[in-house]
Image 1: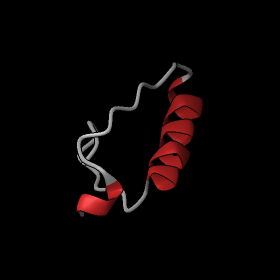
Image 2 (image 1 turned 30 degrees about the vertical axis):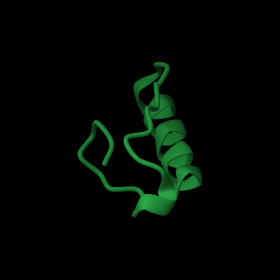
Image 3 (image 1 turned 90 degrees about the horizontal axis):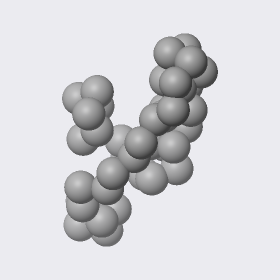
Image 4 (image 1 turned 30 degrees about the horizontal axis):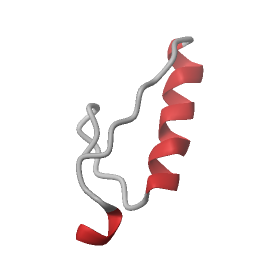
Amino acid sequence: MDLTGDLQATREEAVEWAAKIATACRCRQEQREFMDDAAG
């Protein structure tokens, strides 16, 4: 789950969403991994 409250299936998906948010908000986005993808 990211800070927007969304659950991302993969790190790549999270990066894609962060890029969309950064573009829309015209600001940098920071990503933090809460658990390893394999931990599911």
